[in-house]
Image 1 (cartoon, rainbow, N blue to C red):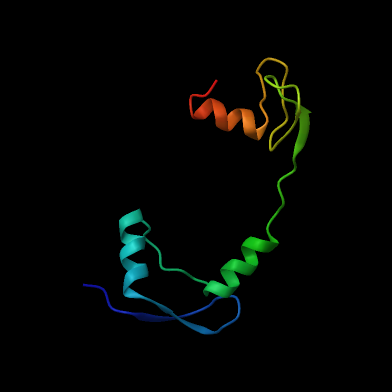
Image 2: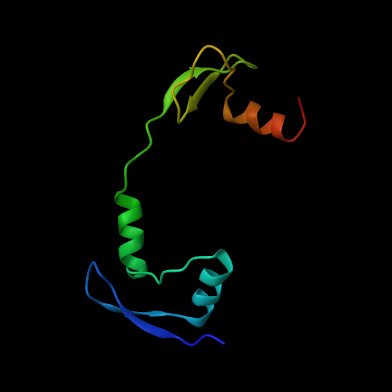
Length: 92
């Protein structure tokens, strides 16, 4: 159904192959546009992207240090990674 297509990267100008398998994946996910950058440029852009700021607070369950990617507010409890994972698995 799909055939490999050769595209040109908008960042580096290098040609890359948009494989039939990748096209099927894009169709399955509902993506309508073809990729515009080669894999190397996509990975470089992702790696250079903005770093998430982490906020330090106290875990509401164990009292340990918790680092979260959002500014905690006093109206909701915040949990460390271990306590949060345990709660998600129903091991409260």
